[in-house]
Length: 356
Image 1 (cartoon, rainbow, N blue to C red):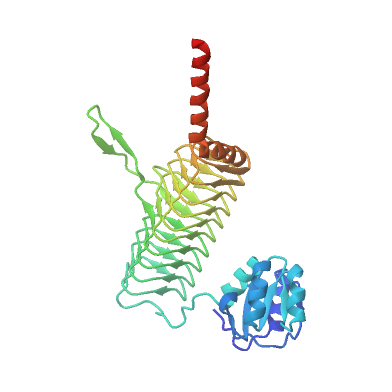
Image 2 (cartoon, helix red, strand yellow):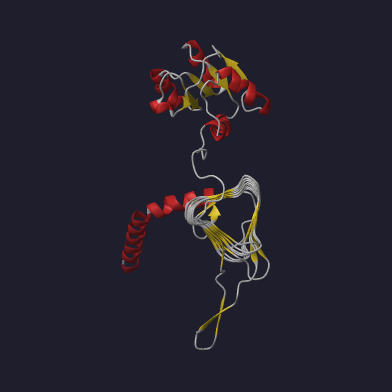
């Protein structure tokens, strides 16, 4: 991570302008930036990001050194004498600028291979890769360049890890699993745990079906803390490029997840389900085994998927319904007691009519 000290608004424009993230700079762009800050606690010299009208007055009161904002909101800051970087997509500008100038800095942390790390003689460790204290690297493991394997992580036999990978403390990467480039795996996650496969006899005694497949994590994937990605029974469990998993997600054996999905906390996907590209799930979504989820599907309100969802759109509820149908049903459900009373009154009236 580079320091913002000495970087001016103009220099940020020159750096990020060619990417299309910043389109224009206005005001005194020679002003240096001290740090990135949230608008609520910004001070003079800080750079803040604002894409909503509700934060404009707060920013004007805090008087930050400069603002990244939209065309629509830029004018009020320029009038107030605050330099502006105009972006067509402020959250994306926030992400890219903070990745370079505000992310965690490992420069003062461990370097090289710590003496307490245990590395099998057949393992290959790429250049500029750091193995922190108590890391265990098994036989035939291949770790790429510029990686950081943090304290207590275990990389089992035959695993392959690409370049620029960060593996946080106490992660386990199981035997023969494959991790792509630019992947982040947060603390205590397990990649390649045994899939939940059992057969039962007539007395309901369970016998394990050994799960001998693998897990493939493609490039640019982020696995949150405390996730479990089970290995396949025979072939592979796969997480597609660019997909991001939140904390405490479970992906069962043989599951195939597409590219650029956003899967939030407590997602549970049962075995052999296929999930398309750019799928979004809200917290506590559950998906049964052997389901198919198409591209550009959004699952909300603790969706429980018990049949295939193939068409793009927003779905909710158990069983899953298109969002509009789900919301209509919710309105009816909320008035259920009143509807019951009215039905009872009608039934009573009809009974009286019959008697008369």
